[in-house]
Length: 148
Image (cartoon, rainbow, N blue to C red):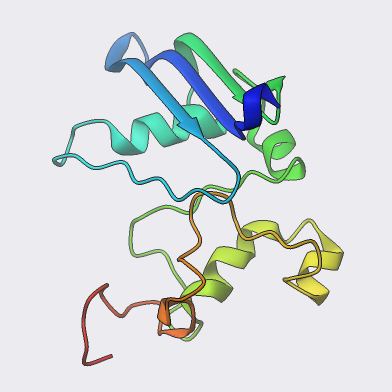
């Protein structure tokens, strides 16, 4: 792992077909760190994440996970190595908690399903802070909504 970095993205450019949507993205995520990508609709947030995960091809740049170059690697291989992509759209199971929806990305790991804390991991960069009660909230409860 590069100097304690779990995920390193350098010079990433991606888009749809020949149309580039994101240009020159750099990103570092350390173990246990929570990172957010913020921007207006159409700014390239989802495109960036899909390119990192492998559901969209990269036009240039590199993606490194746990020290290994995963640029252009298949989503299946990325899931098997512990990377999950949970879309921000409303494609969640409303009758499950936020935590349970996030853990669905770890279905390939039998020991993690049996005991989510077995290896001390939460889905990288997506899990709420341990002091938050959000993981046990209904999945469709908006963040910051005190009514849910």
